[in-house]
Length: 601
Ligand code: ADP
Ligand code: MG
Ligand code: ZN
Image (cartoon, rainbow, N blue to C red; front, side, top):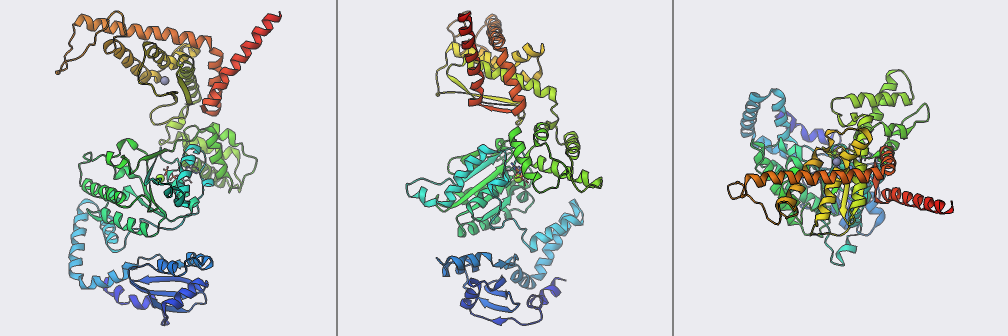
């Protein structure tokens, strides 16, 4: 079949009528004036079809692509460049046909190799494996495009912080001079980190779309299936192509599949992974910072990445792409209701409220499921009911545990986080509550970010005690409101205990133990008596108990804020500093009014 195919190939290509010969400049002029419908290159020869159906053939210089030589020829001529960008290149691999022909020469060898591969695959899998290996040998999988994408920032919603950070990259790509002229180095690598389905791939495409630059992409997981050496050469190909078309974006999806800490894997694909990874590093080090190629990688597991990848000069910018909060979900839903017919006005807010923990991809899928529900019932328009049914289906599905955080649990989490935040604000005089959220992230169900206003290196006894009280704030809030507390505080307790222990053993912050440092010797044995050890335990316990009393006092005094803040959290899911501080200002104003009234009376 191969032989037959290869022999009849030329005639298939050219069809019935023979193409006319033309010079390259004729071709160029025809492209520039918009007459050319599409072209195809085989080695250095170009076959092309005019819009009126005429077929022609011409040759180009070797070592330069068609587009490139056209661009050079018409540099500065806007109309011509426009036409050039519109002419279609048939997306066939230029090397494929000549490769096929040359196979004839090597046929015996190729056949033997193919048989060996078939034999090899035949043992582990069935015919499927063999055919996979075959197609791999004959035509390159389309790992990268280099096409422009039409995705824009309007297509990505609910990840405002990430958008803000990446808009800087768009500016780098659009106006590189602005930065290079004052000696700023444009970042080479950016890594997008976030749970699956939050729009990392989409965001990368949107960056390319916004900057109007070519977009090359490969996926880490594809390399894992390849043979040794292929991944590395593919990376080389990719980068050399990208460099020619710069400014552009090279996107490496699922980089954790190749960028795992080295020495973790033990199987055969490990070698391949390492070579591919090394090649990426070599390429990234190789091009100078102003070449205009920006490499964007995506992963949902930043913790497993090799150190070498994230060191400065490589993927040193990290952008978090988190699960959307309530407002974000509304925005995403708004995107996906746009092109669907609805029978009634859809209550987007209600849907968003019912879908905590859903990613952008989940929400898109939700609207799709709703349409399927409606269609199954013979409707031609979607109803609110269909969407709600779809939520249940998705939320009950095995894959979507986080979405099943029931209302009661959300309530507990809201009070818990509000507790941390209030104590952090009131006792932490040098700290600022940056953000409180009940959107689940990784293993935590909610989080409160408290960070010092200024970096401090020395921690006083007072600060230690307040921090521990803050850590107990979650559990204490639960206790005050619900009369009991949950396992959600286990990490808080572990951190609090470590701090208390450090106070006693390392910093001399307990009167009873005194100004001594209690250490272990080289063999891990205590360099202090068992009696002291027992006293340490008691002191640790006492510090935590004291902190717990303080936490309870602060939260009881501010129970109104605790209630209001938690309610707001349940409603909007994320509260930042500006909104948070309002709760306290309101209270201060109310108290002022009260004292004035009291005076009047
Ligand atoms: P990731 O790469 O983070 O796993 P993708 O970018 O592949 O996620 O998302 C899959 C699809 O889900 C996208 O193509 C898009 O249709 C939808 N989607 C995900 N996140 C968003 C978002 N923030 N805004 C709009 N659509 C989104
Ligand atoms: Mg992706
Ligand atoms: Zn907590």
